[in-house]
Length: 176
Length: 122
Image 1 (cartoon, chains in turn purple, cyan):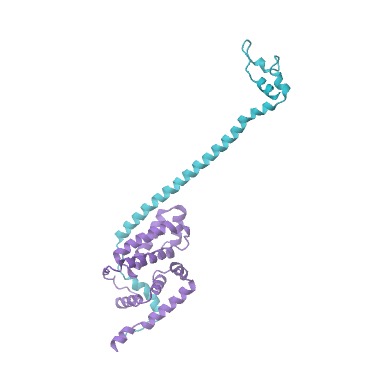
Image 2 (spheres, one colour):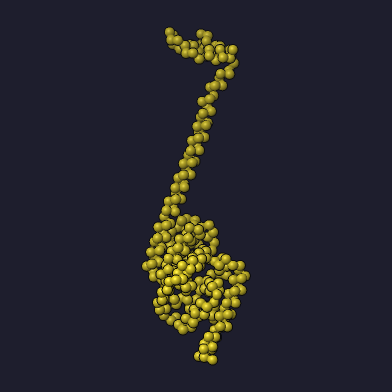
């Protein structure tokens, strides 16, 4: 997989549309999924992807050192506005999830984990997804969410610990 | 039935596969967005080229202005001859080998040049 920083460097230096296309191809499917995971309706997520990338190409060349962090920063800000607008509308149901994978959690556990993550505070959800799913470094997450790097490290650890503590809690309550 | 509580490291490792299971985006819609974005990029390049043209025109204008200022000075130089020593101006009126009157063909009136200077100086 090509280095996103290198691709954006080529795009900014030479106006290389091919480099941008490659960056877009590698980032847009996951950005769409991220927005859907963060509660944006699938149809609206396409509009947000378009808007986020449009703002991205207009401004990324001012400081192209952490393009993914910058892209997700734009997207998370747009998402807040979009959710505010869409609050009155019913959300579209998601299609069935993809088939079971060889490693990682099973379908049931994956759904349970997603549901547990969705119960966390907004900021912690963003932290966990950007760090452990999108794969941004602590520094990049800090840039994306406008937080100090130390805070990101600490809150990631705390959020994971909280997830573990609450694991199976509701079922215990329901049964006993 | 109570779920078995996984380790913290396991939870961190499960987050990515759990969210990757979400349905994928429609590739055609993402491709349509890509086309629109690439169309946005093209005018940006034309704009850059237009700036280069403007810079070129400015440079050419500056060079032209410089050239004219140098040439304007050189056309002013003959004025210096007006302050030339008077005897030399005087000689121009005299017929003879050094006088300018010799340069006009015989019979034609000599052009009125030197005397004006001479009269003004006196």
